[in-house]
Length: 457
Picture 1 (cartoon, one colour):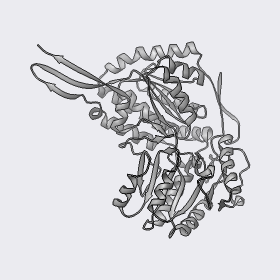
Picture 2 (cartoon, one colour):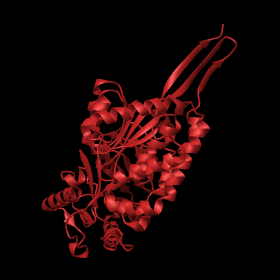
Picture 3 (cartoon, rainbow, N blue to C red):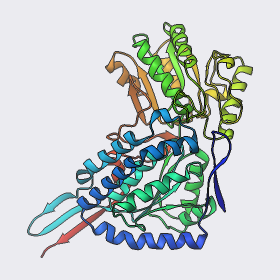
Picture 4 (tube, rainbow, N blue to C red):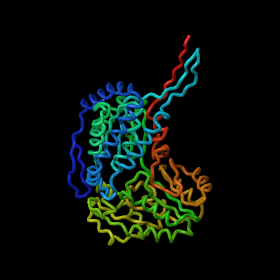
């Protein structure tokens, strides 16, 4: 089977790669498992140093990477790639590794040594998405390697060059080609390997359907699986919020990367006293965007990664307008030229009966609703099959935390949005999935506890 990356810039074939056969994939797994033993035996400090060197090597490639990202998934070159977040996450996980992986000493006396150690799973499969292809991958790759696992990275077909870049970087600093492998696998082979217990742990970031397929493949055994399956993240602007800050941050959270952010803002609830002003300011911001070729420095909004993604958002928007929603952005401001290029849109007079307020859009559209109080906002925020993040806007931190306690989500932000803090667990609930990445908890998921009860005499 052949994987093709169709560039959203012009619809041309940007890259083609052949997938591994079942036999080739099994051989790669065997090499990884064999190499992992020696890798885990190396001192933790050495593994940390090598991973940090690999991260730095990616930084040295950044100029080329920025152009490749634009060609593969459409993000404008003006934003400079992902190395800032990539480095921040890897560096934090390196910093906490010794503490996070430290044994729990229960007793060390003349009679007994009792201790709980964190030991690697062995081989970890990382299935990474295309929307933030470097940052999402490093969330698991860095701590998995540091913890002593071997890693196989299967990247999205839309961003095949990312895994190759990461492999070249890590191999260039001395990490074995068998310890870290970039692989191209079709869905059937991936599922078969999981079902055969090829991996000690699988981390998947992608669609709900993809997550269900991963879970089904592991149902014959007890392979651990971490799932981050997107969201329909809400923002709630209270009557005492800093209006300008709320509008600027939430609209950026809804539209940046053409709305293709796992924790992007997809629905906004505004207290009725601020609603009209919020919408007016939001429309002004969006009308200032420039939709165009991501290779052009002036472009602020590039194409979506694939025509089918753009068509899904077009369909949600069209259905909402037909059901009574009001569209505030004039198409004349944003000539699309069809295909993957999609104009941004702000909708009001929306309801939760509309797909655009219930299904993940993953594009540059956001619905805004007026609410009369906290109770109504909480009810609407929780009226979703997803639970990744929520963004609250108020000057009253105590009030915000009380509301946060009632929201069914993985992360709650106050006066910010669309940010992943590596010191906090990246997790979700409901159809967003389960598990947790980054933070100390990320290390716990990438290792297993092993107890030692040693009687000395």
